[in-house]
Length: 423
Ligand code: FES
Ligand SMILES: [Fe+2]
Image (cartoon, rainbow, N blue to C red; front, side, top):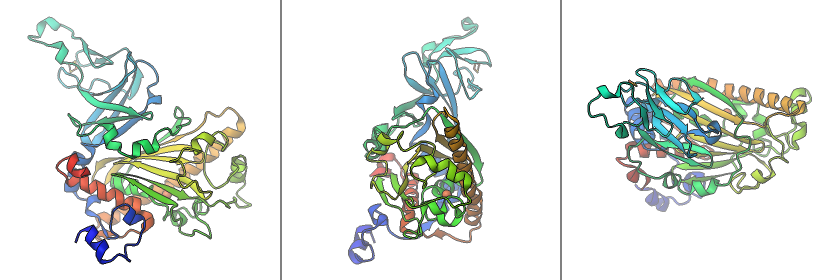
C-alpha cells in the first residue's frame, strides 16, 4: 500500500504530525543500514560518493597560499583545499601526477607552491604543474595535462563543500534546494575561533548522527547536566517546538525551559550564566551580541520564548546547530560499518576579559560533560544493533529527524542516480 493509500484508508491514525509532515509513515525503521557491509558499500558509493560534503569553513583558509588537507576515509580520498592568488578556494586530490604519491603530508600550511617530496614535482596552488626535475628525460610529457586532479568545490555561506563525483549530478544550489535560501544570511559569529573536538567512535556514523537529532534522550541520559534546561514540568519529555523538511535535509527547533534556574549548590553554573539574561542554555556569547543573529527567520523559527537551539542537518552528515549563544557544528564520517570519526566545532568569542574567559571555560566543561554522556553511549547502541537481537527500531514523533535521515540515506543508497534518489 502506498503512503497516500494508507492516508486514505486510515486518516485518523495519520493526523497531522511531524512524521506525516516529513512525508513518512509511523512504521518501525530497519537496523540493517546500521550494520551490514552491503549497505555500507552502497552508502559509500551512492550517498557519500554523490553528495556535496562540507570540508571546512573559509576562515580556516584566510590567506593566499593557505592550504588544508582533509581525509574522506570512506571514499579513500585525501583532499587538498587551497586559497590561490585569484582568491578562489579550490579542491584537488592529494595525489601526484607523476607516480601518485601523496603530495602534501602535513594537515595545513601556507606555501606558494606544493611540492611532492618523492621526486620534487611542484604545483601551483591553482593546481597547475609548474616544475619537473630532469624534465628532458621524459618523452611526450604534456605538463598542461599533468596538474593536480580537480575536485568540484563550492563555497556557500562560508562553508566549503566538495563533490567527489567526476561530473557532479547536481550543483550545490540544486543539492541544498529550499534549505539553501532558508539558512542564507545567518550571521556565523566567531567563525574564526572554533574549539575543535575530534574522536573515533565505535559505532556506525548514523548512530552518532542520530544521538544529536532528538531531545527525547535528554531528560534521561543528561539528567545531571542539561536535563532540566531542555525539559520542564510543562514539557517533561523535551518535545520539540517544530520541524521542517527540505528534500533530504531537515531542521528542528528544540525546547528550552524558560524558567530554569541553576540550583543553589551549582555555584559555578550560577556565576557563569549570571550575565546571560537567561540561564536555560549553555552558551558562549551574550544575548546582546547575538541580537541580529537571533532575528534571522531560521534561528528559532517559531520565535518561541521556550527555545534553546536549532538543529539544521545538511544531508548526509553535517549539523549546524544555532543556539542562543552562537553556533556549533557536528560532523560524522563513516570509517567501517561500525566505526566512525566525529568532529565537533564550537565557535566562541575571543575572550577579552576575565569574566568572559570564565564563562567560556564553564561552557567548555559543560559541553564536554554533555558530549561524554552522548558519546559513551553510542558504543552500547552499536553493540545492541550488531548483536542481531533486533531487526527494527521504533521511533516516536519527536525522533522524526532520525526517521527522515534513515529514509533519505536508504533512498540515496539504493538509487541508481541522484535524479532517482531525489525524484
Ligand atoms: S610521485 Fe610525486 S614527484 Fe614522483
Ligand atoms: Fe545528547
